[in-house]
Image 1 (cartoon, rainbow, N blue to C red):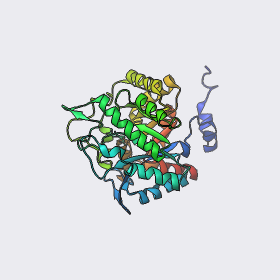
Image 2: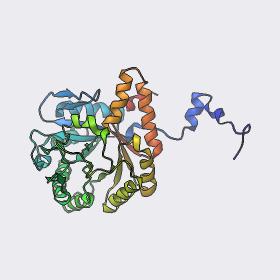
Image 3: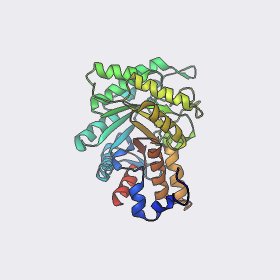
Image 4: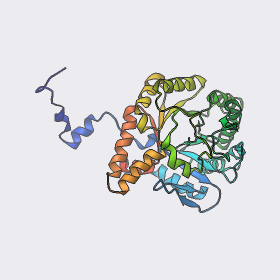
Length: 326
Ligand code: PBG
């Protein structure tokens, strides 16, 4: 190791041009994915109170947001559906005319070069708000998988480029892979929410997706925030079951997990900067307590530096525009 005064790290920090030259981590719009919340109807744009700039939209309005994202260079969108009806088994999840299925068709018709990812989960479709079938206060694993398979297949049939199971049931990746292969969708990749931690960071999303559990919480199926080793095991397991991309979520509070999962798997890693992370930055910026744009950019760069290849973020279009302007 060279010592002061020979080694002076500040030499390369003197000008913006020098800093740009030696920056190790960069963001590119094509690595960003924008989540979108779709529902039936026309001309609908209902703002989500706790997420400035985010709205539930009908498909015609959603296409405007998707076009804006694509024009800014954003790589893809992640679709969540708010169905017209909910029941105990979430049967509207595999309705061929459901909001997600219709949105996928519209997107592939209108903006074919934008990657369309669909969230595969039951919580938006069940009347109790849990991510699967509820029995005696518990979400039953193996029966839930059968429903997730139906949902994933209906997304693939509609033309989804990637399906992304977020339910955290054990064994769902293998079951979805088998079913996709058997039905002729060998080329549809699975982006698995592998290390999805239970906790308060999803609060604003549950308003956006109308998916808050009516009783209890998700700690019986989502991961405990203290567990890094288990996160690596989950990711390795999903890779063994056939996942093509593994995800860590939330992103900012779990940068160590992103790093470990990337090192352990060597697979493409996605990180989801979730609603709570987004809302905290927006809220502080609205109060004038932090610089919103710079905090957004630093938060995204940190997620990349930790090892994420793909970032799912509500900032996707805003960040992409800023990157293009630089
Ligand atoms: C569905 C799902 C959730 C999120 C993504 N998929 C909510 C949850 O698990 O309660 C959260 C995304 C966010 O907070 O931005 N299970």
